[in-house]
Length: 181
Length: 224
Image 1 (cartoon, rainbow over the protein chains, first blue to last red):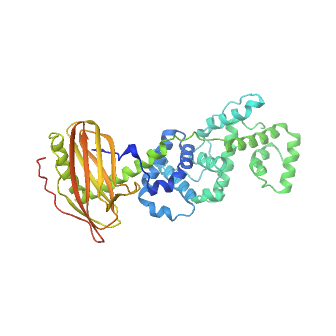
Image 2 (cartoon, rainbow over the protein chains, first blue to last red; image 1 turned 180 degrees about the horizontal axis):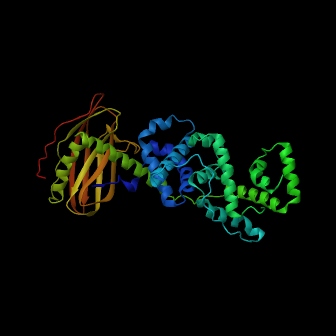
């Protein structure tokens, strides 16, 4: 059975769309950061909208809709990871670093250094564990505070803080091993 | 402080979380260790670079497509629930499937089938129409016309819409979110056009001030 799309050539919006459309670029960017691909980011946002559509009245009452949406998207992604891996995501990171592979330092001219550094980081982010990568993205890339991330993830701030430091250290070591022995 | 301490306290130092004593000890070590100076500088550079990471821009039409799909999928869910309960959508769908099935083989006929639906005021009701096509059909024009007391919810209160689409072989579902703006009798008219073939059918809708939704039995006048 196929579904006929209503008058796609004369498209109209509804209240749900008016309410959430301003947040879609933000949600897509966050989803892209989580997933790393356009297709997966679009699927994540799409699934979110499908789930939220019946909850329009609830959405209208939420004061900080942006933060609320980010939290729901984050939890949806965590659920997605759980399903994918068939094992719970370890939100209490042990700090173990199974990935001993390191990126080879590259010598560059000063004017190229910044772009090279960004490219290098983007290449290395997938090597972080999911929980490390998500935390680094939310805090250091997207600028969320640890309090905000705690609200999203229900992980204690102390745990987040120590995990963030371990993650940063791991990223630095992946880029360039600590020079002193 | 030694090199290992620098490695350990790097982030605390950059976030000004060290005590004065620790900070002075760390900076004293840095003065004599170019490797650790480089390490601290690299840590700063990485933090700066992270703030400048940008995700690729979203496809321009993604948002609209995503909202359309959300609406569509939720309409389907609603319809499925009602189907399971032998409710409003099912009855209408079955009747229309018969009519439209005939339409594909009797293009000259224009028949209005009586179907009376009772809805409550200001409550959105999805009426699902099922068009049963005998084969894939391209360039089908579907027109929906509502009487003055009815509107399509979520589409700016429009009462008339017309668009081109294609039908796949088998059942094709169109879910119409109908809302009554005034009480009384109303009409939903659906027209399908394929080339010079044309088919019109009509559903009577009675909008009540309040109360439960009901549907009268629909008996197709033409064979399915």
